Amino acid sequence: MGRHRHIAIAHSHASDEHRLLLALGLTGGFMIAEVIGGIFSGSLALLADAGHMLTDTVSLFLAWFAARLSRRPADTLRSYGYHRIQILTAFLNGVFFILIVAWIIYEAIQRLMQPVEVLGGIMLTIASLGLVVNLLAFWILHSGDRANLNMRAATLHVLGDLLSSIAAIIAAVVILSTGWLPIDPLLSIFVALLILRSAWYVVKESAHILLEGTPQDVDVQLLKQVLVDEVPCIRNVHHVHVWSLTPDRPMLTLHVTVDEKTDPSGVLGRVKDVLTTRFHIHHSTIQVESGDCADK
Image (tube, rainbow, N blue to C red; front, side, top):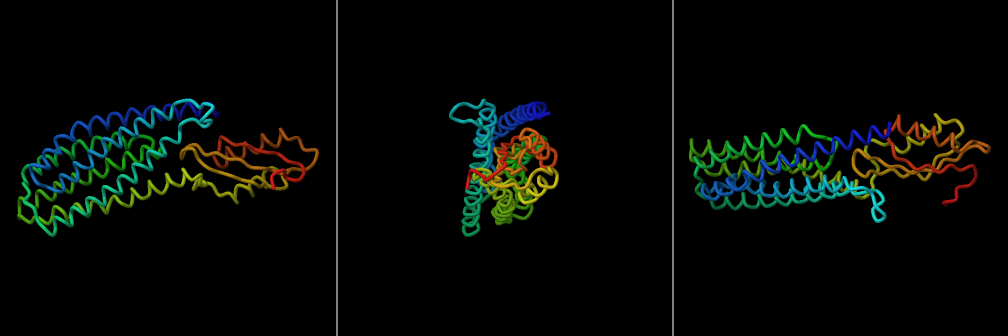
C-alpha cells in the first residue's frame, strides 16, 4: 500500500511540474507586452500587474525548478531527500509577494497625492489580454495538487495577477467614461490588500513546516490516547515528535512502554497500523520499551 501511495504522489508531482512549466510559458510570454503597455499608458494598475507578472515569472520558474529538484533521491548528506526545497521556495515566494504588496501600496499613495495621466484605451486593451492569459494560467495551476504548498504559492502569484488585471480593466473603463484618475491607485490598493491575507497564510504555513511544527491535522494528545486504547499491551506513550517534510509527507517518532514478555515486533506492527489508518502517517520510527526509558 505504501509503495502505491508513493507512486501516486510521484505521478501527482510530475503533473504539477508540467502545469508549472505551462503557466511559466504563458506568464513570461505576456510579461513583456504588459510592461510596455504599462509604461506607454502611464497606468499604475497596469504597471502593478506587469510587476506581478515579472515576479511571477521568476516565482514560477523557482517553483518549477524546486519541483524538479525535489525528485532527486536521498543521499548521505540529505537522508530525507530534497522534498523540503519546495517548502523553502513557497516561503520565499510568499515573502516576496508581501514585499510586492507593500511596494504597490506605496506607489498608489504617491499617485493619489500626485495624479498622473493615464491612457485608458491602451490600458484597457493590455489589461483585457492579460486577463485572458491569467485566467488560463490560473486554471492550469488551480487544477493541480492543492495540498502541495509549492503549487499553492505559485497559484497565489497568478491569482494576484488575475485580480490585478480585473482591477486594471475596471479602472480603464472608469477613466474612459469619467476621467476620474484616482480609481487607478485606489483599485491597486484594494487588490493588494485582498491578496495580502493569502500571502501571509502561505508564509505562515511554510514557516511552520520549516520549523518542524506539528501538522495541523494531528492531535498529539489524541494520538497517544488512541494508541493506549487500541493496543492493549501499551502502558505509556511518550517522546512523541511529529513533523512534515511537505504537507503530504508527515513523519513521526515515539516511544511506547509495554508489558514485560510482550513481543516487540507484534506491538510495532499494530502501532504502525493505527498510525496509518487513523492518522495517515505512513513514515514512523517506533521505539518499544519494557522498562525505564533510556532517554530521560
